[in-house]
Every structure is written in C-alpha cells, then in structure tokens.
Image (cartoon, rainbow, N blue to C red; front, side):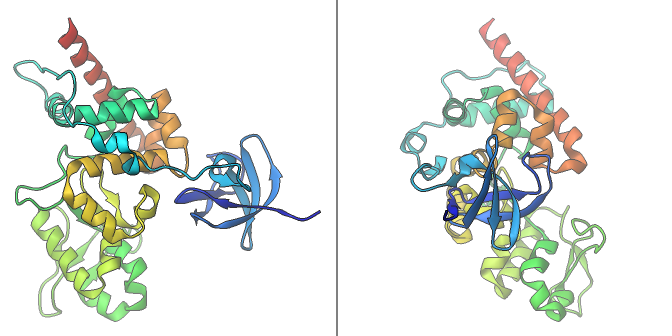
Length: 317
C-alpha cells in the first residue's frame, strides 16, 4: 500500500512532539510543506516532515482535496467593506480610569471593525477589544505619522548578524543570556553605545533605518509593527507573501493592523482562537505573549474585558 501524503494548508503550522498543544514545538512548517501521514488520531495527525516525525492538527493539512485553502481575513470582501465606527459607542464616567479611557477610544474608533471580526470569528466583542487594547497602545502611528515599531537586535542577529558577525558587533549589542534585553546601538565605533528602547519612536526608527541600509528584508523581519506589534518574520502567518507587503499594508492604516492581529489569532494553530472563544485568557496569553508573563497579560485582558462589559451595561441602562 502506498504512503498517504498531504501538505500544510495554512501559512505556518506547528509540528509538535505529541498530539496536543501542550507538547513541545519541534518545528514551524510553512504552507505547502509535504507531509507523510503515519497515523490519524483524534483531531491530530502523526506525520513525517523531512526527517522529523511529529504531530500536527489535522484540520490544517490538505489530504487530496479534503481541505480547502485557508482564507485570510484581510482578503475577505465583507471585512474590506466594513465601516470602522461601531453601531453603539461607549461612554465612560466623567473621571475614567486610564484603561477605561483606552477602551472607550479604541471602541469608538474601531468598534465597527471589531464587531464584524468578532461575529466572523465567533468571539465576544469584549474579548476582542480587550486583546487589542492590552496588546497595543491603542494607536498604530506616532505623532509624526510614522508607524509604531520596535526593533529587536537579537532577531536581526539571527537573520543577518550571524553571517556578518564583525559588522553586527560594531553597531548592535544585546544580552547573550537574555537576548530580549540590553539592546544597544551605535552608528560607528567612534560613538558611545546608546539604548535602543525607552527613548521613543525616533530612536527605534533610527536603528531600523540603519539596519535597513544593511539588509532591507531582514531589517523588516526584525521589527514588530503597528498596534498589535506583530513581528515582520510572521508575515506569511497573516497572509502576506513578503514582509515588504506587510510593511506597506500596515503603514496604510490601523484597520489593516487590527485585521493582521486577528489573522494571527485565527490561522496556524487554533489554540489562540479557541481560547478567546472560551475567554480562557491565560491560555491565550501563554500562546501569544509567552509563558514568562502569561499570568500578567491574562489578568490585564480579563480586567479590560470585564470593564468593557460594565461600560456597555452602563450605556444600555
């Protein structure tokens, strides 16, 4: 009997060590990756991808003509045509708390889009709005009109620095033990090192533009973009063929950035989407923000969701 084969039908799919989302991730498989099907389990497949054997969610593997390609939200006509303003606005008290003010502004500016996305994904608008508020500053552009970004030195090292170590070390630095910390930069070896983060968007863009002069594509891989701060290397996961397309789209407006967040949630692994539907914010935060700060982010999202519900009740009372 010949082996049954399939291929990955979404932009990115986790290959895990066991049949469940709690098992370790062995690799991230790109769309179109060919798989040899070894065993069919309850919603999972044991597969061989190259030389690696692991488990993937069956719904994201196309076997013959069984599974239709995934449609990204950004390509959906009803999403493209929806208005940004909500049918019903929020109204805070005279002296709102900062997070209440953020909820009000976010909903009043983008509630129409959030309502449509929530219906399409079968999630509570309170959860959708809370996630957007917590995972963003409530705005996708700075006062100068430039898109909000954050340049990650350690990511630029991964994609460009390893092949150009001397040049990288002349201009970029980070903590080797905790690579997400200690990000420093200098234009030349004659200058003093300066912090990349905490100095506003001017510094972030300065470092990004310098990195862009070294390698345009990898520099865009190394920034998180817009309201949801999605890393450029995730462009395929949210439906963009190139990081340049993602960068251009996110620069065009905050609506594209918001849709990008929910494309990130809805594609690849479904754990994020299922967690939002259940309002299991701890699982969501663990997957989206990482385990180190999962409890903190879960608490923030839960608090924002409950505040949104209370503000909406007050509006309707």
